[in-house]
Length: 53
Image (cartoon, rainbow, N blue to C red; front, side, top):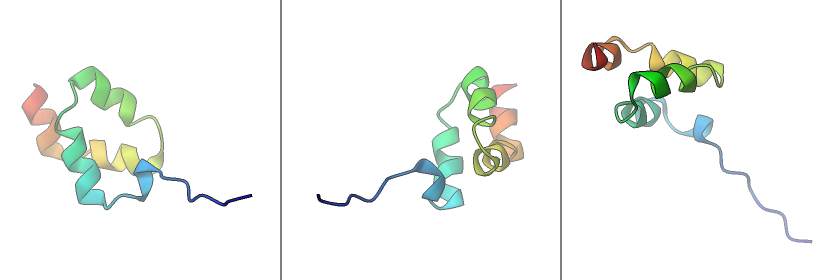
């Protein structure tokens, strides 16, 4: 059987995750931050929330 490497968003560079967050609505940003520690840290970048408010 052929082995496959699993792709996971949390393996992206932190800056890429933050850039992805720029496209989320406030509701999606809050949900995304609850997925895992890496995503939570990415959603805490201040300018993301300033864009929403």
